[in-house]
Image 1 (cartoon, rainbow, N blue to C red):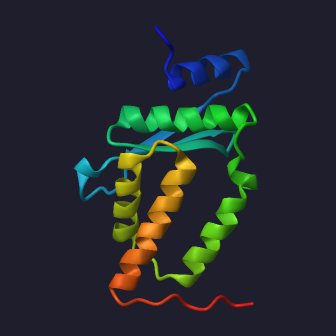
Image 2 (cartoon, rainbow, N blue to C red):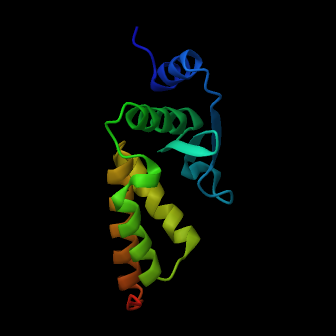
Length: 141
């Protein structure tokens, strides 16, 4: 029987004497059937974030992403160049938290890779805002 990503991460954390904090919550508290987001922290540093229909799925996705970051096969949250691109997107577009949460939920249903979820959610969010008549604000230089 293969180990789950969460079990593998916990084993690695024990071996390195790391105390991990799993913070799992609903994507939208007003709509409890919409899924969960989990963030794993160690010493105030985010190691991984994940999404899932259940708490367990979100924790496994976050654990998988944390393992990738710890093994050096994925950029850490602090050095991820895609974060800068997302910041630019959200500087240009008006933020509607409920709509954004729904876009994340939809993207998380079909994908397990965090970067792909983010890309799909942003694209869906922009398309929906355009359909609703919103235009992006020009970026300040």
